[in-house]
Length: 376
Image (cartoon, rainbow, N blue to C red; front, side):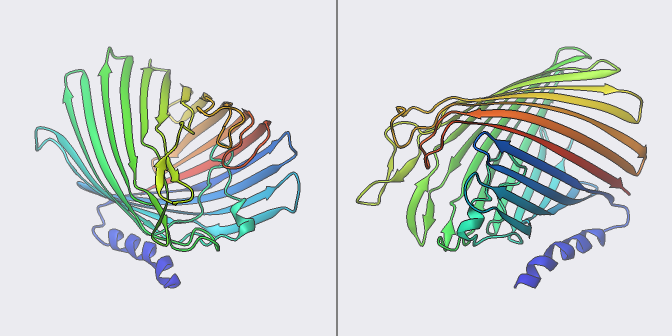
């Protein structure tokens, strides 16, 4: 069975490659190195090596994404630990219908193949770090299937689109102490509208709604994530030699359901354990030449404290983060392109008591990433 999991992505790549020699192919690889430490003397690092293959033939497209990660964590007290392992393999199939219907249509089908690491030991569980600290914070899941449908329409300077998707998530062993974990399915709905004010100015308004099914372990209800709402606004300016974009997003998560004691039945929490989240992104590109582009971006993140009082066992304080990135990309020829990005950040977390007690602390970290893209 393990051999089949490894062979399946290669078989799919061979199948697509055999469809037609006229298909367009793109291969991407590179590395990402993340490192951080905090004021409690804890520190961590991660090396992520992705591999992505894309192929397109007429209206059909296919992609496969897999990778390998090395993750290291050294707590402020206790022994350090690390993990080397391949990650899950993600397959995507899509078919587009353009200029044949009153609207353009994109039909997609995604798969998550369980080639990564599951059944984590108690020591390995501590390697699942915060997503704001490292690139990969999920080493493996079960077999997932995600059909999607996107519809778009253009009216003069206006463009609008909506998309829906449903993820069937399979069971897997989350850890050695949590067998037969069923994370529950996910439904999501996306919408976006864009307007071109002029040749140089553009704006977009977008949103997302996500609904989560309840999580189960051995067919027993454990938890149900609250509904997820995202609203965002973006503005873009693109003269000839450079361009810039600013995006502001607001994320609101509704109340979750937890096991009520002593009955064990899921019940809505008394207050909202999630604070409202704001994310602002400012990006700038300068086109040094037709082949060379310089890039920079600035991101601010603010997660407000949740609704519980500071002495509650479910209190989570405020989080604030500021990130700065600098990079460059270079097109060497029609078949080869490279990109380099360096990022640094500082983040402060107030005291939190959920899901366990955590004192206030400040994180500092940096990332170095490189990507190589080949087309043929």
